[in-house]
Structure formats: structure tokens, C-alpha cells
Image 1 (cartoon, one colour):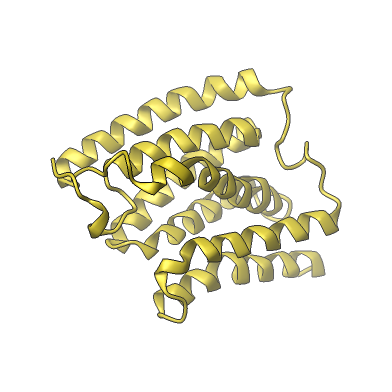
Image 2 (cartoon, rainbow, N blue to C red):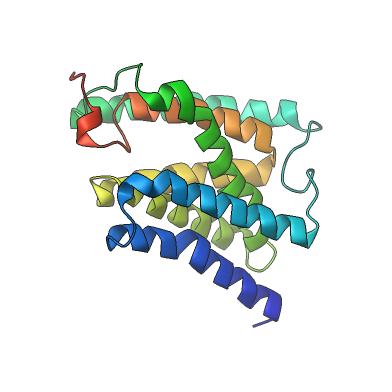
Length: 206
């Protein structure tokens, strides 16, 4: 294994796997999950700066916005319908619109997650392994991140499905701006229907 490939897999291990394992093990309280995400974000920023990555390379571009919108818009609509149907089937309840997630965190979190998983992880994996395998690994790690919430097995499946879709879309249309906005919309829908939340947040029942 080449040094650069080995270094990438070390980065993946310590940035995308170890922090989640630490939360599961109780070494890091789950209430600090956003702080952990912020730390990972700044580490990745440092890696990209040192490597000389350009804004265009990480998907901050305008040349493919129309193409990206044509792909992400139906994906968001379809994803929202799936979440709505699942919420009725699982009787998940609802989250109040006054919840801090809607007021402050939905867009920033979506930007950070797309930056980490698409602009960094997916793009770098595609440089060392096949595109289908890179998409699969990215999707699984995205699902794994969501296992810090109750119902880890279901969250792993749902998060991985979403991660798989988003990785495919980003492969076809690498645009971090559109991906982040689309993710934010779906993120709001998911949290409104009480996915990836804690029981105490579900103050409105269906």
C-alpha cells in the first residue's frame, strides 16, 4: 500500500470511526457530539489546506449548478416522501418547529456533513479505490455517524441509504453548495419527523 493511501485510511479511521466509537463507549458523552463534529471539521480543513486543495476541487463552484439542481431536487422530494411514509409506519411523532435544530443548526450541520463526507471523504477515496466502493464506504460511514442516536440499527440503515444516494449525486454533480442546501432541506424533514433525535425532543406526538 502506498504511503498516501495508508495515510488516507489512517485519517478515515481517526476522523470518521474512532470518534463515533468513543461516543458509543462512553468515553465522550453524546451531548458533546457537535463538539466532536466541529473538531473533525477543523482537522479536515487543516488537511485540505496543507494539501493545497482549491475551492473548485472541494465543490465550491458555479459551473454545474443547473445540472446539480436537476439531480438533487427530485432526490430531496423523493427522500421527503420516504421519510414521511416511514414516520407514519413507525409512529415517530413530531419535533416542535421551535427546536434549536431548526432555528440554528440545520444548515450549518448540513454544510459540515457534506463537506466532510462528499468534498473530503468521497473525493479522496475515489482517488485510491473504485468509484462504487468509494460510494459504499462513504455511505456506510455516514450511516455509522448516525448510530449515536437511539435505534442504532435502524439509523445505520436509514443513514447509509441517505449517504449512498448523496454520494451518487455528488459523484454525478460535485457541487458542495447545492448538495449542502439539498441536505439541509432533507435534514429538516428528517428531524421534523423525529428521525435521528432523542426521545426528550419529541414533544409533539402524531
